[in-house]
Every structure is written in C-alpha cells, then in structure tokens.
Image (tube, rainbow, N blue to C red; front, side, top):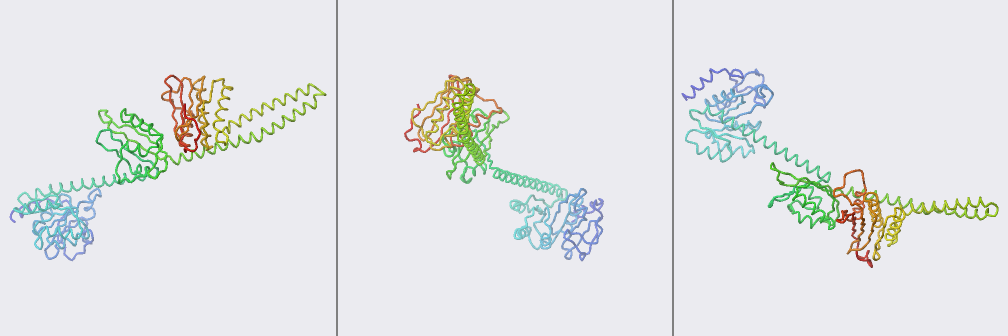
Length: 550
C-alpha cells in the first residue's frame, strides 16, 4: 500500500483535464448514462456506493462524447482493492476514457444490464466471487463484453487459462502495473476497432453481394468465371444456375458437361470454338446461343466475356456474363410474324384486288379496240396500246404480289418459290442463278418455309450487291431430321471480320434462323465466294420421300 499511496500522491499533483474530483452522496439520483442529476456538468463526480463497496465515475455529456462529438470508450474495472480502483480511475480519466469502477460484482452486473461497457477489466479475485465466476454469470445473461484480466503476482497461470477462454490480454499488478495498463487498454481497443471495421466491411460485402444477386435475378443476367489453370474450378453466380434450371447446392459443372448437357446440339460446335479461342488465345467474345434447360424448355442466351491477365500479362481467367434473351427473341419473332402476315396480306390484296381490276380494264380496252377498229384505225391502235400498258401493269403487280407472298401454303410451296426466284434473278440481273433440288423436300409449316425463303432472298441479294457474283446456286435438301438450305456464289467473298455498320442483312438472316430454331453459318470459301447454310430441325415425318443432300 506504501507504493500505491506514493503513486496516488503523484497523480494528485497532476491537474485533472476534466475538472476536480468530489464526493457525491450515495442518495444522489443517477440517470441511465450514470450522470448525477443536478450536478455541475463540467466536473467529474466520484460516488461511493453500497457502503464503500464500489466507486463510480460519471461524466458530463460533453466529456462522454469528447471534443468532436465522438462517443468516448466506456471502461468498467472490477477489483477488490478500493484504493487501487481510485488510482485506476484517475489514470484512465487523464487518458481520455469514461471509467466506471466496482468492488461489488453484483452491482456491476446490474449496471451492465443498462449499458454495456466498451471494455471490461476484471480482477481474478473479487471477494464474493472469482473473476471466472463473474464471466460465467455474464455468459448466462448473454452479455458478451470484451475483457482484460487483472491478476496478482503468482496468478499468471490463471490469467493464461482465461486468455484461452477469450480474454483480449492480461496485466499483472506489479510495480509497473499503472505504467503498463494504458498501453494494454489501448492495444485492446485498437484490436476491437480493427475487428469492428472488419465486421463492417464483411457486412457491407455481404450486402453488396446480396444486392448484386438480386439485381442479376431481376435482369436475368448471370455471371461466371472460367478458370484457366488446371485444377481450379469454374465459378457460377446464383442467377447462372437459375437460368440453367439447376440447384446451386449441386456445385459447379465443368465446361465439357455444360456443352454436352445444356447447349443446343446445333450450337455446340460454335460455342466450343468460341470458348477454345477465349482460353487459348485470350480473345474477347460475344455470342448468342441456345440451351435446353433441365425441364426440357428451350432458352436463348447472350454471352459476353473478356480475359483477365496478371501483372506479367499471363492469362489467369475469363470473366463473362450470360443474359437470358428468350423474351426478346419471342418479341422479335412476333414482329417478324406480323411483318410476314402484312406482306402476305398486301400481296394477296395486290393479286386478288388490283390485278383483277387491271385485268378487267384490259378486257374493256380490247373490246373497245375491236369496236372502233372499223371506224378509226388510229383510235383502235391507241386502245391497243392502253391494253398493252395495262397488261404490263398487271405483270408488275403480280411480280410484287409474288415478292410479298412468295411461298404458297402447299407443302412444295418453298420449292416452287425458290425455283421462280432463281428464274427472276436470271432475267432481272443477268446472273447465272440456278435452283438445285434432287427430290421433293416438303415443308409443312408455312412459317418455316417463309423464313427460309427470306434467308435465301437476302443471301442472293448480298451475293449480287456486295459479292459481285456471276453464278449463284440455291440448294434445298434433306438431312436426317433436318432441312438444309444452301446458297453458294463465286463472288469476292465475305470478309473474315465483316465491318460493323448499319447493314442489317446478316443480322436479319440470323434472327430468322433463330425464330425457326435453326442454325446459320456464313463462311468464306477457300476458292472464293461465300456459302450461307441454314439448317432447321423438323420431325422425321415432315421430310418423308425427300432427297438426300448431294
């Protein structure tokens, strides 16, 4: 106690930063923050509670929150030495902490029900109970407060045992105790602050991940990460699993399994080639393809990805997104269907309306010619010229009608339409255009026939306008459960990477192929020219008595 009294006298000589220490009667009313009501807010108040069994220091509002309004840490100290508690209170107040001290652990438990301290300093020996028993009571009350163990010399083994139970640190009451205590407290508070910041960062990360997952679900946009190194697994977002109809609990699937199990058969080679270029060459990509979900439904996806390299430039992974565009494809199909219906309607109106009216006018002109030929040859000749011009108008109108509605509803309507189309190309553009079909290839669905014809029409137009072709072959044939449409020309060929521009030809052909669940390939021929091939899956009975491809 001589050493303790000497330190106390030294502390008394140092002026207190928060004001003087004065005694307050135990009957003074206290609020929840521990402030005695009606006292001078600029003074630190010391209160003796329970007949000298505890000392509590209370702070004014300005002192609880510091100079800039930041709430000061609240420290609670439990020790059976009241003189030492007084020294600790003065020491910690000078360090800028709010401090509450107790010698009675039961009073401390009641006060902790009102406000949890930031840090608890508990002596191993507390008189009525041990420090371990006090901590056990806190556990029963479900109060989890970070704590530091204070122990006397010779009790280090007990302190180490309590450290294993969660103590942040321990300090021994020896000659350097009061010098070491602020350092131990600061280290513990810094550790708590670092832990709090880590928890806040982790919570923010979880919140961000949840928001991202929700945003992906709303937009039907999944993400994935493809591992390049052997032994690493690919990563799929939750929305990617939902797009495929998979349960994320099943774990990631390999690229090979994805291609074989989900990618639509006609798109597998194209998809596999894209992934190979991305992984082996680090090429960015964007591709539309189809998948078959686990429930058997067909979905349209748009995938885009870019390589990720490390500091040395080595490719380490590929990050990409997958967007479900099935609804967009459905709307596109409806637009194309409406467009085709309008084309057919206008074509029928031309054929059945205007052409019939023009035919009537032609007959009237011929009758007029015969009637006036006996009276005036000049008038008869003029009537004949009018009839000839009307005949030309009829032929032109019928040509427009056939262009707007080229495919008849009959099963062989596509064959007839392509044959007529080839003949018209020969006459109009003086290009050697031929239609090749070794045997009957009936197409029972008029929508499929109409889209195939439009694809042929667009491919031939591109061959003449851009490829400057002099010979064009239009081929229609059957493969097992497929119909094949091919257009070959001997022009200058399509560029390996077609320039981006306002042209819509290739995209419209691709749209039309997608609308009938077909696949479209446009490639440059080694010997010059371009080949456009569209294949469409059809039931086996739809192609009976059909010829094989030559």
